[in-house]
Amino acid sequence: MPRARSSEISTFTIIKGSLIPETYAAFRDWDFEETDDENFDRIRRANSLGARSANWLRDVIKVLHRRFAPASYDRALVMLAQARCPIEVWTPILFWHITRDEFLLRDFVVRWLFAEFEAGRYAIRTENVLDYFATLESGPTRQAAGWSESTRRRMAVGLLRLAADFGLLRGGTTRHFASYQLPDESFLYVLHAIAEGEPNARKIIESPEWRLYLMDPGDVEQAIFRLHQFRKVHYEVAGSLAQLELPFGSSMEFARRLCA
Image 1 (spheres, rainbow, N blue to C red):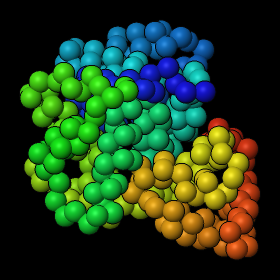
Image 2: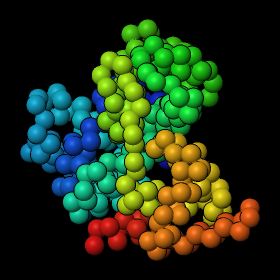
Image 3: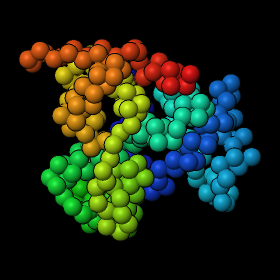
Image 4: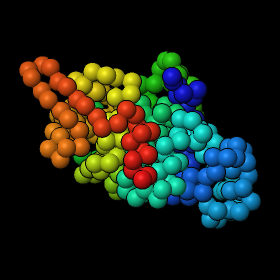
């Protein structure tokens, strides 16, 4: 089932950034016995995120409220934070969850940034992302046509900063592609998540969702072969046919194993 806001653009959340440590801290102390509002009220009163000001704390909570559904879609992400999942494993999983609801971030990386990566672009600047905005003409992206020049630049900076925060880019004013390596546990989580909606092994490998991590089908298959060698998955190929068996039935079940 698509998430309620999976086709919407939020300029506010893009500009506010990834909030990786703040999200980890909030979910580490999350109480599933309380409602979302009760949890956020408690976080606000205690300032358990260590916010530098009341305004910043308010904005962070607004972003978290907008991005996540801790009791349902994002429950596994919360459980992993509570189990003190290593941040280098948890962060790529966070990226997966954020892009379920952040339409523009997902579209930017999957459709534009990955194409630039494949084309061998060396440097990426704000002006290049402005060219990407010119492709947003219809559907959920049509609202971009009404952005002011100032908003476009702030959004371009925000998207590049998000890509850098999640390890895809490096550098300051001028960004360059990083040598990104998806940790095995994170890869397996995403693999289970994609398999939930796609039983065909070949289509799983060819899913455009892997472009979020700058991986093409060859990269994905190579990673699966390696995990097969370590008996973490079972993968067989015979001509154009492929069979993939995963150890768990869902990403939630896999997350529970990581939490154990």
